[in-house]
Amino acid sequence: MGVVLTSLLDPAYPPARQTIYLNVAKPAALIVIEKAGSLSPTVKEFISKELALKCLVPSLAIQDDGSLRGHMEDHIFVGQMGLKSQTPEVVIGPDSTPTLSFTSGSEGVPKGVRGRHFSLTYYFPWMAETFALSENDRFTMLSGIAHDPIQRDSFSSH
Image (cartoon, rainbow, N blue to C red; front, side, top):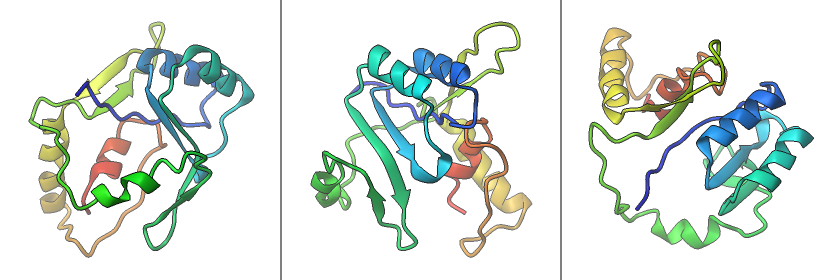
């Protein structure tokens, strides 16, 4: 299996910045979260002309009951639902890189920065202990969806 990285693209960012991120990341799949906003025509054109996507989910929404709803022409998740109870055949270690963030680009084109799994898994217990969090606590995002602290927010178990 190849490298699997997760990255977030904020539709609120300028289209030129979004296309830079997409050009650097060269994703094989793209899931558009409905409540995040729409991609601009410029970004949609870049995706269709420059990327070889294997999967595109143009509008995905997580319902209150945890189910997924969206415009999934291929019903991509329907055929996968039976796999929910199986353990994926993916080996994850401290040096695995589950995330791709981007530098500010203040010195030129933004660069992709791979985040190590260890950094995230180390942070969760520290955060739970420091702020006395438990499975009963909830918190919201502390940053925009494309800013790297979102890794803490989206991958946290609390």
